[in-house]
Amino acid sequence: MAHIGNEKFNDTIYNYVSGSALYAYVSHYFFILIISVLIVRPNKIGFIGAFFLMFFGTQFLILITYVPINWLYELIVPPKEYKKMDLTPEGEKEVEEAQTPEQEAAAAAAAKAEALEGEKRSNGAAMDLENADVQSGTSDKNKNKEENNE
Image (cartoon, rainbow, N blue to C red):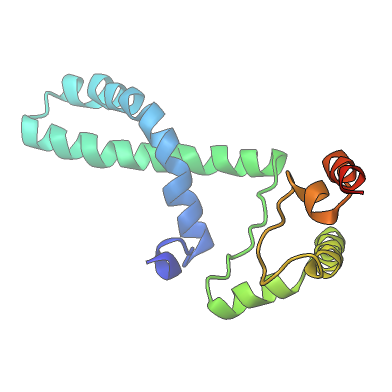
């Protein structure tokens, strides 16, 4: 679904259908009132005729007023250029391979730290940092024990 559901098949239709949705929501009641006051009531049109006139007339008025408003808006604020998202696994691999300089530096630092700590670790186990001094023989307790043994 992600491959077809989020894709624009035609930019112009997408712009007018999705862009006019909010405008239609905000302005439809105004156009219903205009049609009913200026056309339906003075001409005493029946329910069925008024229904179709209101429905299609409102849609028509929304469209013919949205087009110039959208044209003016795009003159003032140019539309953004969007880049299509790559959803293929090959694209994900390419993204992982292309790293920023900061990511490369972090990876190099991690590799260096792993190489330095690799000698101290056994079988990839985590280092016990609380007792690191005891294990290395540099703690004050070990020095006191050695002096007492001598």
